[in-house]
Image (cartoon, rainbow, N blue to C red):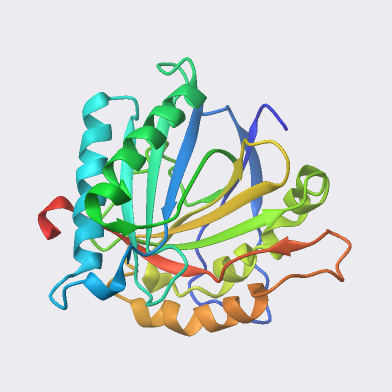
Amino acid sequence: MLSLMASILFQLPRSPSPSKTNALNMVEIDDPKTCLMFHMMTTLEPIDPVLESPLSDPMARQTAAACSLLTEIAATKVASEGMLLANLEKDAVFPFITYYVLNKSSVSNPREVAVNVRNTTLKKFDPRAIKHTTDHTFDLFTEVANIVCPPMSQSKRPRSTHTAYIISVYKVFDGDDSEKFEKHWLYWTGARMIYNYLPKSAGLRRITLHKSQSNGDKQYVLMCECANLLQDFTSVAKLLPALKARLCGCTGKCDMGVVSRPLPTCFRVINENEV
């Protein structure tokens, strides 16, 4: 992997045109000295559905527990930033994603921090205590590429209360990552489509490709930050079907290797006062 993170600076087009491809100016910037941790959760399910009260609200319980967990992790100060994201679509694979930013200059061993966060999370969602179960996915990631709108900012914090994210998750066979997937990521992930066709009113600020640090097959997370997405959700609602048609299933015919990926979905930031 390159020691410098490849970044792309761009000016958003005034009116996207299907017949015109917008130029992307490539620059390299210094390594931001951060790594990121994603915690993805499936929907909370009762251990014994027969005994589940009809008044029970697993989604509200999961939201409250996730917010409480984020507060606990923030108190330890192992992460410089953190966000809890809730899926805007029903029956999503991951209704919640928690996103932590770890600063390598202050965290000597990110993997140790990740283990501690994982243990704290599993304790918070202990099925024996909450009588519900959920699947957890944890992994450390690095940023391998960015499309950003100048001026660049290292902070991952949302810039407005209307900020939301389009997120896609990919799994790539080991060996097909740096040599094939990352060279063609703009096309392969649909990032170029988002850049060219997402209306300016959505306020696209950043598209980031994250790569897992685990051994073996690699997981990638494409995260698109839109500053006004919640104000203009219809613009994305029109774009998502095209992305889903492009990304669903596995592609075994392409010489880039087989990539399996859940459908792209939209997430919004959850605030504690919503619980």
